[in-house]
Image 1 (tube, helix red, strand yellow):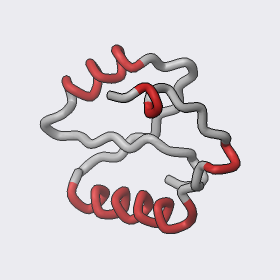
Image 2 (cartoon, helix red, strand yellow):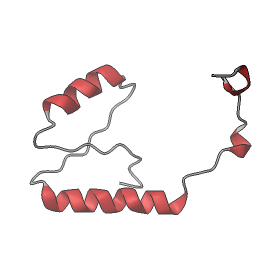
Image 3 (cartoon, helix red, strand yellow):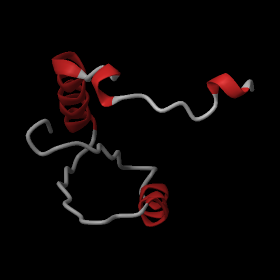
Image 4 (cartoon, helix red, strand yellow):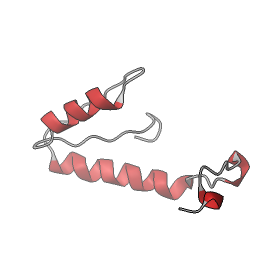
Length: 74
């Protein structure tokens, strides 16, 4: 990869926000999953690292689906 494209710092003012459409898509996916799966759980955690979460998600993969998002959206 050329040096000009490596580790460019992008100002937050130039980053596009997700907007309402993506939030509505998350809500729609959650509602569709509620019809598909028999149980629903809401989890709250602080300082969760990727490793333990991956293990949890992998162990419950056959009959569960995880959505990560803010409580206001979900």
